[in-house]
Every structure is written in structure tokens, then in C-alpha cells.
Image (cartoon, rainbow, N blue to C red; front, side):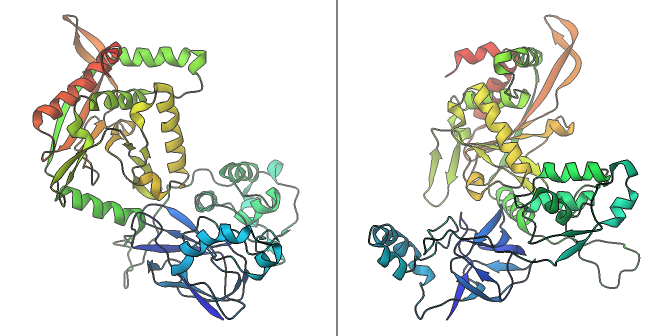
Length: 463
């Protein structure tokens, strides 16, 4: 019989998702929890597992199409007269553990219902689900254009065609990286075998065959302008992270009255401390830099200015003060600006905070940040100094009352101990919600952070 799979809520109340690519086609036989498609929400790329075992009957959306939550996504032809309704998943999943304690005959006779939200469900049989083999042709022509352009001493000893048995296993960021380098992902798959292709595999292949390494920066998918002959304009679809970011920033800008205050501080002592920590062998594995020290200083300062670690609850008519710091760090990625959070940052030591920042940046760049990691956040930091910018007026993330922009560290003439000397200075820019935070509290927070950066030993005085 035919069973419809409707797009589930992928978390955080997201209302729709865009189909990035289908990994199955009509007529394919799929197993429980086999990945059906990759969809992009406003926050992350998510893999959708199959909630049924059976044959794909219909795909209700094309790649690139946006589907509303609850709308039909794919139809299956499943064996049997009765099938589990999606709404009954949670009840059936609860009953699953009880059913599994019964006899083997009972396990084989009754199919286990699927888990619609995609976090995995036990298969209905003893057999381990196998990955569907997707044929892409018995042979794949080699990328002769790349090979002919490469130096002869780096040409691989390979035939003009490569035998490929299934679709290459890789993630969207890796495929995009291969495309930018002009590398055929199928040829990489022929070398690495059945395992998932990594960015390092693509780079190694590109270096060996001489693929272009001066690839341009990633571009958004473009839509041509009807009737345009001189390319006088380009239209870029507003979707995914860009669409979500735009809506969030408009909401924030026209809801919270923003105030921004600036303060330039001598961070020479902090930079000397960082240099000393980097030379310490016990801390060599931790990437402690200026942003890490600023993050630690901000967590300490928030304990003295709780208004900046609060949110305005319009519906309840209350100001909610958080007794923890879920620190948001703005990250520029290929998909746009995202702000993942470091949970309970106030309880971390400097090395722990450095490790958390490194992991956060790596996950964001690889496109693996989950909606859960983007949710919440009580206070945020944006590092504009990495772009060589000194100051700015950042917009508050919705639901937060403060965001600190960290400027570039520059050597410049500065008054020091009654004389002019070359010192390393940084500008801090704090934007805050004036409904929650008064000007005096905002100024006190910036001064507390600045005092720690000027004299890191002052951190010992705060708790």
C-alpha cells in the first residue's frame, strides 16, 4: 500500500526546508533509516532518514524546491495492509522497548514503527540495514581536461575510465569544495573506496592531478534575468541561512531599541600573556588567542552586569535574567552568518574555552552545525577584527540584550605611564537593548572587560 512521508518539524519550530538533493529515485528499494535526502533549513543542512521499508513511489518535490513542514515529501509502496501513521510514532516508539523484550517470533511478526524526526529507529528485522547501491553507470569517463592540463609527472596510473559501483559518499561541503577545485568527486571515490570522502581526500587528489587551486570564492546559485543580454544584473535567491538571518535582523532592529557604546583599550599586557601561554608546553595544544581572552573577560563581567545576560519577555511582561552564559560566537560560513553557542561558557577555564571555540569554528566551516547548537544563546560576541575592522554597530541576535564586537589589535602611539609609546590597542563595541540595559550598566560592562584586557591579573578579583 502507499504511505506518504510528510516533512517533519526539524527542530526549533522551523516552518520549511529546501530540498538540497535527493539520494533516492522512484523505483528504488529503501530500508528503515536509510538517508533519503539532504534538506536545508534556515539553520543547518539535515539528512532525512527513511521512516519506512519499501519502494519509493513518488517524489513530491524537486531539488531546490522549498517544502512546508507537514507537506507531503515522498511516497512509499510498503508491504502489508496496515501501516503506522506518522502521528503515532512517539507512542509506538515508546512501546518498542516493551515489544523487544518478547519472543523472537513476536519481533519478526510485528514491524517496528519509524522515527520521523530522524534520530534513528531500530530496524524491524534482525538484519542490519544495508546502504542502497545507486548505480551511476558501469564506467565513468575520466576527467581528461584536468588530466591533460596536469604536469606529466603527476598523472595517476589510471585507465581512461573508472569503474564505479555506487554514488560517491560525501557531505555537501565536501562536494562543493571538489566542484570549486574542478575535481570530479566520482574519481576521488574510485580511489578511497566505500568510505566517506573527506575534504583532505579531495585536496590530495587535486594536488596530485593538478586541479586548479586558485578557485574563486563560493557563489550563491544564480538565476538569469529574462531578456538580459549584457549581464547588467544578477538575481540571487533569498533562501536558507540568508533568509533566516534577514528576518531575524529586521525583527531585532525594529523591536529592540539599540544603543552602541565604544571603548578603545590598551591590550599590550593581554598580548604578552597570550605569547607566554603559547610558549607553555602544557598549553601548546590549546589555541589561546585574543578572542578567547575577550570571551573569558566577558563571562566574568556579565556576573557584575546581569542585565546584559537577560532577555525581554514581551508576552509575560518580564525581564528574564539568566544565571548561566550560553555564549554565542558569530561565524561567517559559506552558507552565511550563523551564531552557534558555547553552553555554560561561564564555568569554563581559559584552555577549555579555547578548545570550545576551536571546535565551534571547525563545525561551522564544515557546515555541520545543528539547529540545537544555534538555538538559545544569552550573550554574543562577533570578531570583526579578523577582517581588519576596528569598530562597528552590531545588531542584537533576537532574544538577547547584548552583543560585543571585538576590533583588530593594532600597534599605535598611546599614552603609557605618562609618556607616548607604541602600544597594542583594541576597540570594543557593545550594542545593547535599552529596554533592559541602562547606559550606566552598559558602560560598566565595557569598562570591566577593558580593565581585564589592560591588566589580566584583575580577573582574579572577579567571580
